[in-house]
Image 1: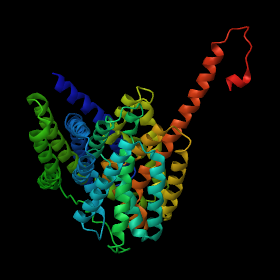
Image 2 (image 1 turned 135 degrees about the vertical axis):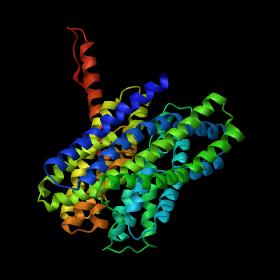
Image 3 (image 1 turned 90 degrees about the vertical axis):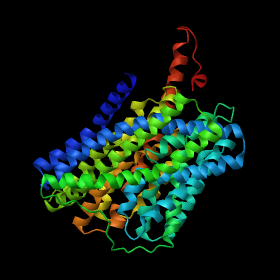
Image 4 (image 1 turned 60 degrees about the vertical axis):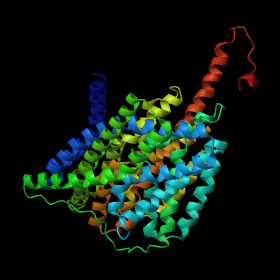
Length: 508
């Protein structure tokens, strides 16, 4: 009965997240922008698959990925062997990133770079920076100084890189911290942070996602010096052409085995490692062990359904819809529409729910889930608007990210360190598979219709979605800090007797 309640609750959350986006798209397709009816039918089926897939995946993430991360983190901590913690962090960072669904979605769109090479490069970057994150937790290094140093290196390399690689590099940093990576890495960080006994330890477990987002950017920028991209290249996105409803069904039937195989290959190393870890060290009892195995099965099934629905149903319609809006002279609607979809699409990102829940728990409710969700919605709406502005004007991505990260890092020196860590973590989770599967193809369709360069204009959307929460969440932290100081002053005033003299310098 309890499991049925959990499934019903997760399905309800998934419906609430996905339906607003589907309604916006349906209204556009039915009343404003004519698109092939087969694409709309495919989108309807894709919406249903994404809802069910998201529900199953979030159940699996809670009962499997988070638990595995907690157990491994606790065992690594108990060993107190630095070399073991670092080597395992690198290995797990690489393995978990290879299974990240939004990385796989992005990699299929990037021209001139072999998909496996891009995934391997990005995964190595995450593994390396997960090691650095562990060192930061163990030695209590302030996050703001690491961010300042590493982003300094990022922008130095960016100034020397080809424009075609800049957007892909920054997008890679955004997509690597998605629904697979986030619950695992955050749980691993909490486990390793327990090795420290000071009260700041649990808050230092935030910031892992922030640093792990930097590794892929640096790795892809370095890859750019080896791979020379064709500026005129077009993305390898294939738009489905459906003459009848049978064609739609055939496409889904054809795609299911492909994604079943792809997800199985991605999850196999994690599954094999967990079994080996269970036999050698963990030795869980039968019931919790079976619960994790069932969670892995839920994760597998959820990912297959999610990726199939996103790639077959959402990507094709997104690409066609973007181009059709330009062809039907609705260009003026693109920026506000992108902002509206950005506001709702953040709720459909599975990793966001993991982060907001953990933030609320570790902050003892001081930062509520609702507060975090609203702040992220504002950030992603603004990011989508800026991304569409870039598509229509061709403004270089470096102008936006250089200014945005400068503001974000400057804010880090004026807000509580916890808010900085949470903000940079939130930037990673905001840019997930829904953004990569629908908004990016939508921007690519608009770019093709206006005659822009896909590599420099469309790519970069995920990067902006990852950047804006760094500013908005820290701004929320600054407001919370100001409100806290004001309430302290009010409490001081209210505790004074009516006839007591108020010394202004004491209040201030």
